[in-house]
Length: 99
Image (cartoon, rainbow, N blue to C red):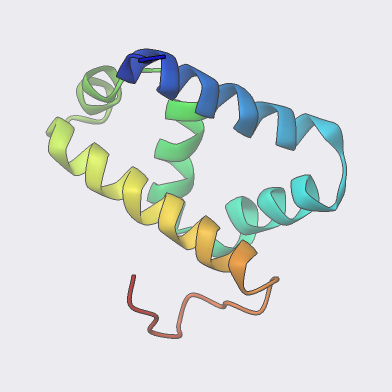
């Protein structure tokens, strides 16, 4: 079954929102990394993209930056979340881990 990029993106958004809403330990870890480990700009864009479900061009327009900057910032935020969860909360963002 071939899924479109939009379908995959929507599924990822829904999974992210479900994790935030469920209150389990995975949700707690994601909430913590979003609140404490992401930079202010990463947190802002991740929330605009995943919670408010804005497109990257919409975010870029609202913030007065180019869409590629939005994409890079969201990707860095996602990597940081993944690393934090992978290392079970021991990743502090200051450690250099190659992806």
